[in-house]
Length: 112
Image (cartoon, rainbow, N blue to C red; front, side, top):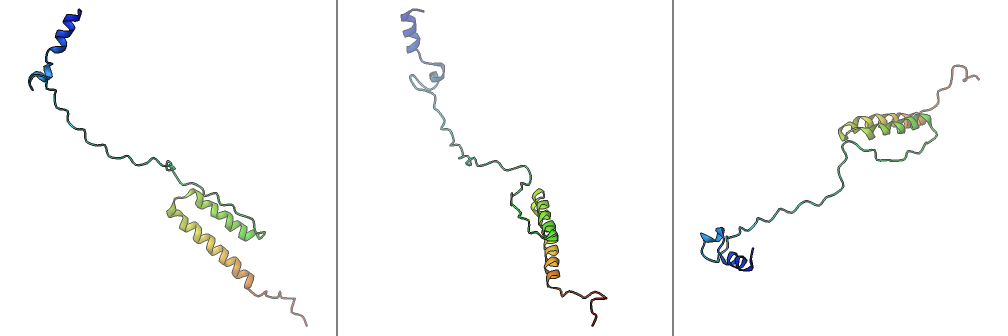
């Protein structure tokens, strides 16, 4: 293509501008502003996640067994926690009540 042909082509109105008048460009529609995206936070886990609470042994086997039972709640949804917590609470209450109970003498311990 020669320089003269390029200049002629540049001066000719475009097909889009021909209907709108000489030298006029097609109107550009304003794009609607995109809605702001929510900030990306940490991804939610797919299921229950253990809290990682450390349970220190007490030295009392019964109490330690109930405290270990609390780990069962780590793998349940929130609605399943109630059953575990009530069971542990009941067991710990029984253990505390047993500490306050007076010792009952055996059949042969009450000799005079």
